Length: 403
Image 1 (spheres, rainbow, N blue to C red):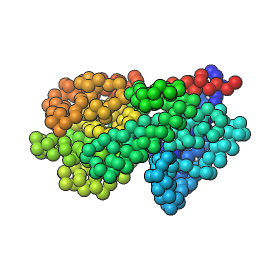
Image 2: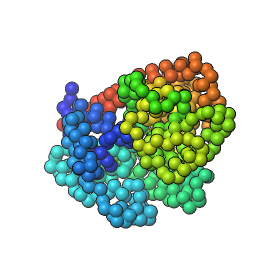
Image 3: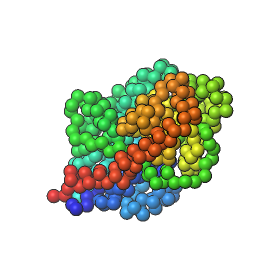
Image 4: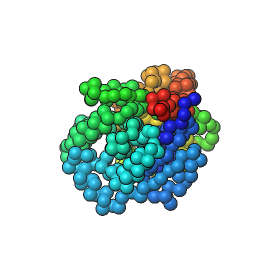
């Protein structure tokens, strides 16, 4: 085995607790890299508030240095500057002179072989260091903003803001990805999109799919409810809120007209007041933050994924596959996951199609059982975190071996 690399892992937040898709990917990539390489993490966060996360990383052999988030007025100033460009708001808010100085100090001391930039937001720290840097694109960020700008359900002023931010973001994203030694994408779909946007000027890329802990999600245990439809995800991530609001407004009413006893449960942290009010009006339940999502998956009739915007791949789908919950998803919702409609999940785009799919699952237990079995097998064989992260750790050893 080749010598361990000294990897400087730059993260926008401490990946703990594992309550968002972004944190889950960050944590497991860091964990599997640390099993083979020497990983030091620099992240934003308050050391007292993030003590449990720092301890969790230390148990993995990862030393974490935290940088206090900026004061509220600084955040507002950066937001204002981000709206003017050319550095978009969702990247500018992570720019910090203290962190930049620490990166330069470590690299100039010769203490770093490779910089791993978790999310595009952290990649501006890579080029000044003169050390090879990798960008882990959880999503092709500009695509998300472009999709919001094209969403006709959004007010015109918001669509114009999305368009403007998407324009600046595309320029920065392509520039940073061209300069990176390697760009990681969640799927071959994202890889193709980024190459097309760059007009072939992109360098090395590698698909590192999202994964799942199959044993954790398939473990037996209590169920909070049963026979319900469920949506899981961080509700403070705009594409998730957009999906649930659309489902409540356009799809759920038709499903309830056909099956008045149907239940829909939205599980995820930080739901907005608007979403909670819409759910109450529609007769759905919103849990907010829960310590464990599994009791809400167990016994569910199906996981609905009515995504209309977004990028990357949906961890919620892989978790449902592992938990034995059938998935009903739009084509965009399952984008990037190598699953086949009618084999591993049911596809639906309209209210009628979602209602038909839910009825199939309720009335055809043999179909349900077959879909669940094939989906769980797919999750175990192709999407386990140890396999995904282990392959990346090996790739780093080969590409960036110490001379």
